[in-house]
Image (cartoon, rainbow, N blue to C red; front, side, top):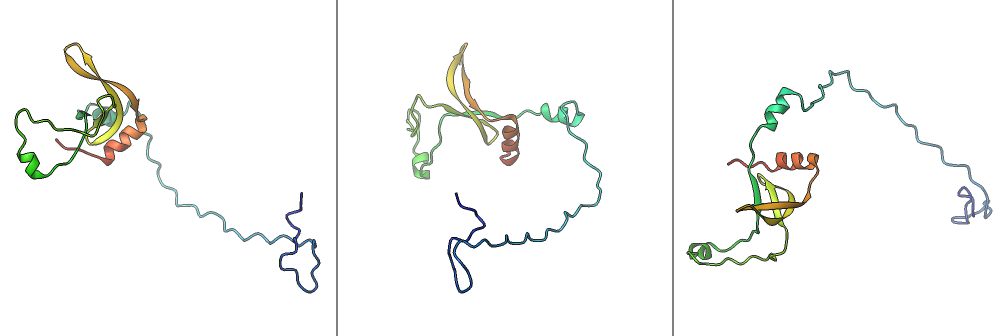
Length: 140
C-alpha cells in the first residue's frame, strides 16, 4: 500500500526525488453559515386540524383506466354501434388506477357481486398520492 502523500514520480523535475513526501494542500477557508432572521415557524398540520378534516371530505373522481390510444378524427367520426377499438394492452395486464388525472396504482379487474371492481396490486405511498393529485388536478 502506498502513502497518498507520496508523489509517485509524476512531474518529477530538478530538485525533486521520486518518492519524496509533499506537505498536504492547505484546506480552503470556509465561511460560517449565514443564519436567516428568526421567523415564526408554521404550525404543524395534523389530521385533527379542522382544515385537514375539510380537505379529507372532498370527493374526487376515482378512475380505472382500461387503456388509452389516439386515432385520427376521421376514424373517430366513423365509429358506430358494434365498432371494436383495439388497444395495445393484453387482457391479462393490470388496469391503471387514477385519482383525477393522477395515476396512483394498478390492479386487476374483478367481479364484486354484479358489478366490476378493482383488486389493487400496487399503489403509491400516501405522500406520493397526495403529491401527484396536487400536480395533476382534474376539474369535472
